[in-house]
Length: 372
Image 1 (cartoon, one colour):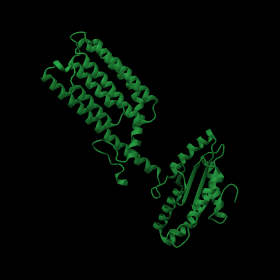
Image 2 (cartoon, helix red, strand yellow; image 1 turned 60 degrees about the horizontal axis):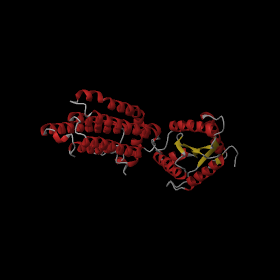
Image 3 (cartoon, helix red, strand yellow; image 1 turned 90 degrees about the vertical axis):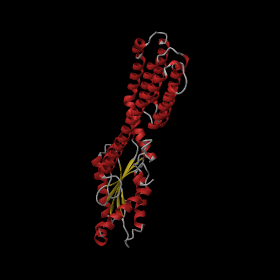
Image 4 (cartoon, helix red, strand yellow; image 1 turned 60 degrees about the vertical axis):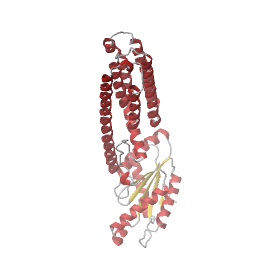
């Protein structure tokens, strides 16, 4: 997918056309919604059960009270089940589809009760329908799932025959059907617009984060992001004692490249080198531009000896790569490992000193605590 199409949103389904971005947004939204949805489900369940009080006052007789209570009780049980699923689940996509299935099962119970008993009040049932569809839009799920489930529920109520509708006046039936459709349509439109603009906000926030953490020239992390990663990994090192290595690299005689070929060519060397290094490291490695001509690598689960081997591969790749300048480009390297009681500054001071030792030893070499 082209970069310009990455943030495009389908105006009908309200989904990003980029599948990875859509999954990232959906996971973020579901995880955020779970925090308020869990107590909200319990609140909705109790409120839905307590609706029996106004219904008791509205019903012309109490003959349908048992059926209504049955609907309320089954709703309470299923919503509590949904609460448990959301609380314990980790795969948001599976949770979304399971939520849709549970909602349809709940509606089936509701319609089955209506089909069996004719004593339920029509207008009360219409009110219940609107409340149920509103709950469908409140519960976290994919927007398209909410539309599909709501449409099934709406058609299930008004189109398929049941005992409640058998004796309803056609005029009242048409008014209820039209007004309910308009209410559901407005709920869907409002939800769609909120969802759409939330995605735009998500994109803007993501772009802002990328700009604040990324070097504008090489498109790798900048020093600020690397510092935060270092702090995080030092804490992990303190807890689990897993090896973590650091490589600091600097171009040799880079000023001559700029003086002889111009700063644009110098920038191109930096960009091409960043791409070369990216082909040699893992996705879990943290790669950043440290300064003007300095790059730095953080290597989780890597001891000093393996970090030296990687630094040698990077050094050889750079000095044998054709930059199109008619001259060889080389780099010097300092390599260290994060040790117990290290902090951000002690690690940087040590690896920086090792890099300058490599410069003093003749450049285009890798230096660690022991000169090899």
